[in-house]
Length: 336
Image (tube, rainbow, N blue to C red; front, side, top):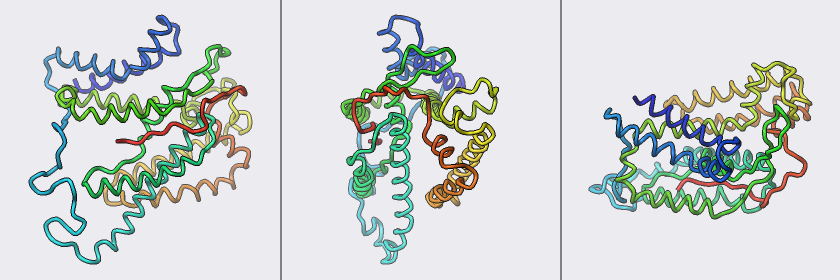
């Protein structure tokens, strides 16, 4: 039953999301269904779960706001130790793991913003340099209060930009829609943060959602965020005839065998990162492994020319010359 709930949620959300680019239903209706595909999928599958009569694991949501162990501590964690004083050398040895954690957060911010900038055709503004500083200061306050650290919500940021993206409608046969503009704003991000904060008071409702339904939503967010990327398109080229390759910049500038080699290197790198992150004994060294990515990227210059690497790194989809955007800053969101 759990598998049915998970894949059912994913399929419903995925199909409703694609209505925006279809010809079914009037324009306003398909846009509403596309924009609210996730809530619609959750509500439908919760009704299915309720009427099936099969016991499933529900979401564990705390009621109200309180410390994890209220009988042992309050909202402020003492920096000198709770049950007994810290040894004098403990703050010194925490500098290394603290630096690694900040490094991974910094790289996550930069990677997320780089992808969004490339996708939307934006130029990096001065305000984006404040993101790592704001994140570090906020996490300092979270540590003092014993709260979970904040990090960049990569999938939610991609989903947000995807919802704000306007695609072309009159496309040549066989060519995917191109980005016309992105409706950049700050209100949607603010309202999302307020809604997530208000969800604390919706515990009785959230407890009705089965855990497999949430897994289906995570699967949906992962697939919809991965599908528009260039690596996804290049993986498809492994199984596509050379005559049917889309006329993207990297296809026109890079030989097919080099495209496949570049894709294979990226896949092996991703697998290696996933393995390191999954093994608890070596997961602490994940930021160090991330630091090895720039040298790996530089070493590719011995296999590819600068023009080939530039096409493989930057070209995600055919973008018309008349691309317009409504702002010079990308939309990035942080968890709250």
